[in-house]
Image (cartoon, rainbow, N blue to C red; front, side, top):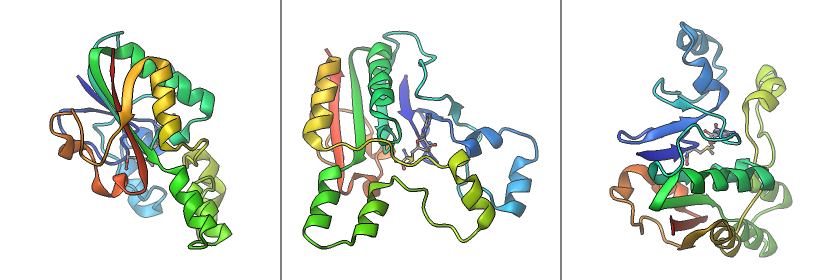
Length: 204
Ligand SMILES: C[S@@+](CC[C@H](N)C(=O)[O-])C[C@H]1O[C@@H](n2cnc3c(N)ncnc32)[C@H](O)[C@@H]1O
């Protein structure tokens, strides 16, 4: 069993693609897609095949039942404590020797861009992802806190690798597509690997 945690719209076959976005929940309601086409509340085309679960809560899978966990650009949406709980749950459900691969935006990259003057202060904040983003649509602006997930924590390579090792994984930094996961090119998106921290490890 392979989990893709915080899948967004990327739902490759052969994976249990998990998310809890409002759009992914609403799409299961009859006629919602038609209503959304008219109101354009959600830009994303949420698939009906997404397994719904709030990843800040205990996972619904048995201990040591999962072979591979992949999670891209999701951990940073959890607070530091929620992130620890999430990674602890990943450890619990992975089987011995199972693989975990986590991809997050690289805080170090953003800071260097700012310090070296390549981006302005407001662009730096935008890159940090802690804001709800601009929208000219007043209704969307008001509803943003209910359906948008700004970043609550950020990581650099040494910090993420250390946390994974503290939890009990044998983890290290990896490059894009450099992975022990079979068929990595099906799950990893090139654009998501740029300016990102990529850490992979196994449950010892
Ligand atoms: C930036 S998107 C990443 C999507 C995709 N993995 C990618 O790399 O393009 C973050 C995803 O995490 C999901 N997410 C945020 N908080 C969550 C939670 N508590 N439980 C489940 N999914 C969550 C969001 O709904 C969103 O789809």
